[in-house]
Amino acid sequence: MRIRHWIFDFDGTLIDSAPAILEAFAAALAETGLSPQVALDDRLIGPPLAETLARISGSDDPALIQLLTERFKAHYDRDGVANTHAYAGVEQLLQRLSADGLVLHIATNKRFSATQAILDHLGWKHYFSTVYALDMVAPRLPGKAALLQKQLAELALPANSARYIGDKTEDGAAASANGLRFHYAAWGYGDLTTDTLPTEWHWLAQPLDLLAEELPS
Image (cartoon, rainbow, N blue to C red; front, side, top):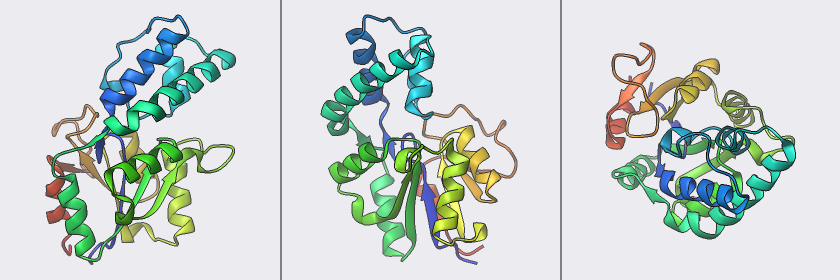
């Protein structure tokens, strides 16, 4: 059966957003007089914003996290979107999949407004039928598994009719929790290797490798 629906994570899968995000983290901390409590590197990319801000500030004080969130958003939305780039091969991949009549989607932890702004910046909005993000509803969804569950349910997609592509262990776990076959984007921010990849997940060394995966199986 040919799989028609392909759901993509965003950061670390389609776009290399780490430089812009890390710069915004550093700016938010500096503006509040704080020093990072962990290294500001691409291992921070992926989890929800508040969770990451608590980690890098070393605090779970709600007022501080709210202040850091506001400072991060102001910096990232002003400068970060324009400094976000696609991974090599992704544009060609999206063109090929769309030309083949496949239906593409996004399911991301990234804020919905920032995701839409980056899609607009890259000229990609026409590629994606739906974009789902944790903060698209209030209260925000608890995690990627719930996000995929909502997306599949609202689109009436059986799990065997879709695939999920992401770069983090969390992405694979969320896919498995929803009965989705998972493709691991090895070019992203995750730390899996071919030896540590769960046997039921599929390794993608580069974006265009997905073209072979979408053939009838």
